[in-house]
Every structure is written in C-alpha cells, then in structure tokens.
Image (tube, rainbow, N blue to C red; front, top):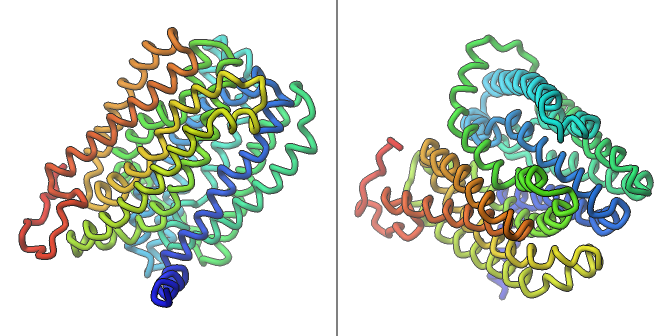
Length: 439
C-alpha cells in the first residue's frame, strides 16, 4: 500500500500527471459545465429551439475545424521539438496565427455564400452569424502552443473561467424559447474572450514575441498540416456534423432529441481525451528514439483506457432511461433509445485515441491516419441516408457507431501490418526491424 501511494504521488507530481489534471479541468469546462445547463436549456428552449441551436452549432463546427486545420496535432508536435528555442517557437506561433486568420476569413465568406444560397440557412442567418464567433475564438486561442510547451494549466484556467461565466449567464439571461439567440451569443462570447486571454498569456507569460511571418512560413505550415486537415474535415462529418445532417433531413425537434443524447454521451467520451492529449507530446518525442518504449507504454495505456471506456459504456447503457428522465425530462423520451445506441462510443473512442493519437501519429503515419478518416466520411453519409429515413434520430446514432467501428478496425489492421500495435512490444527490441517511414 505504501508503494502504491508513493507511485500515485509520483505520478501526480510528474509533468505528465500535472498536465493530465489540468486537461481534466479543461474537460470539465468543455463537457461538465455545459451539461449542467442542459437540463435547464432543454426545458426552457424546448426541443425545437434547442435543436435549432444544435443545428447551428453543428454547422459552425465545420468552420472551427477548418480554422484549426489540424494545428492541434501538427503545430503541437513541432513546438514540442523546438520548445528550447524561443525564437523558433515565436516564429512558428505567429505563422500559425496568420494561417488561422486567413482560414477564418475564407470560412466567413463561405458561410455568407451558404446563407445566400441555402433556404434553410437563410431562414436562420442571424443565428449562424452569431455562432461564427466560436470560429473566431478558435482562431485566436493558441491551444497548440500550450500543448506543445506542456503548459496545459493555462488552457484549463482560461477556459474554465470563461465557461463558468457563461454557465451563470445561461441561467440569468435565457428565460424562454425566444432567447435562443442570446444563448448563441453567450457561446460565441466565451470563445472570443478566451481567445484574447490566451494570446495575452502567450505574450506576457510565455514570452512569445510578435513576428511578421513570410508567405513561405505560412504556406509551409499549411502544407505540413494538409493531410491532418483533410482528416479533421472528414472526421467532422461524423463527429460534429450529425445534428446538421439530421436537421437537413428531418426537423429541429428530432435534432433536439438527438443532440441532447449526444451531449450526454460526449460528456463521458470527453473524460478520456485529456490522457491522450497529455501524453501525445511525450509519445511523439519517444517515437524518434525508441519504438519499443512507445509500444510498451502504449500497451499499458490501452489497458487503462479500454477499462475506463468499457465501464463508461456499460454504465451509460444501463442508466439511459434514468439519465434521460432526470437530465432531460419527460418530453425527451425518444432520446432513451438514441442514448443506448450511442453508449458504445466511449469504449470505441478510448481505444481509438490510443491506437491513432499515441501510435499512428507519433510514428509519422499521418497520411494513413487521414486516409482512414476521409474514407469514413462517405461511409457515414451513406449509412445516415439509409437509416435516418427509417429510424430518424436512432438511425443517425446507428450510422455514427458503424463509422467509429470502421475507423478503429482499419487503424488496428494498419498498425498490425506495420508491427506497431501495443501487442508487438518485445523485451528484445532487436527482434523487430524499425518500421518503414513510408505511409
């Protein structure tokens, strides 16, 4: 027992341990605090208006991913290597900010064009324009910088503070279905202010110097991030675009049923991501020196994440009726079946984080990572078009699960081919050749 406590204390005091704790605080701001407002919002806004805002958020998520462009992985990886040179980190940071500003401008023009062309978007133009502030905030906030320098505490403090303010604002300002635009404004406000605070912290505390990057600097980081950008766009179709797809094929009330269940599921799934993000820079660094060490720790992480994911999935499936009744209310009875179908996702996401983020990306398999997710996009849309007309919100859930099963199965098969699964760890590293660098 004494040794166990000693190991726990050592883990908590280590850099990775502190980063994991900080990122869990961040996940509280991302998922737990919004979940506190869900029981209030679903009752005050009603299924239709709650679904309408979810529809708008789902669309704006595509623009957020466009603006982020995969920098949370590519820029994080590069900064983790260059962290000892303030000159290089400053230039890279300003190049990333410039690239994101360019992408944000392009995204806004695209949104304006969509509003002019698509009737369903034109009817809700005010909502979509207000929610675009979320994309602006993501353009400003240097999440990739804090992750690369392993300064996760800064991310947590800034976001937790802003989302606490937003949570309080929901209960004060949002009082009826007609206040859905005020709710959208609060969502954008928290991101924009958090983005500004993140830039100030980077300049004042991290000593990031403002530099004017050359066109070559901006284009080079866009080229490096291109494959992961394609992956993120494809991934957004089945991870973030479900409410948008459902809204285009059905009505906002059905979107409300689905979105409420999805938010509950995401709140559990999000509790595993901090571990993956905290150890990703360390795995990336180890992969350049010791394949076997990465596989050794990858196997341990797979067992831990798999166990946590399985417990979450089983608990969510069994407690679905009770959760819906308490959190959402009697008006959301259709959400029970949706929630039970989505209950398998925490397990799938936990395993996928280890195989993809901790093994595939650190070993430079970006192209394959992207290929799998690009292929998953059309598969997801195909199954959505098949199942939504038959089962509506439940059909969207089935399509989501099938897509995630395809992703994790494909990832494992590729890793097995390269002998890079956690099960290929050997005490004698000489038993295996180093994996080829090609994808």
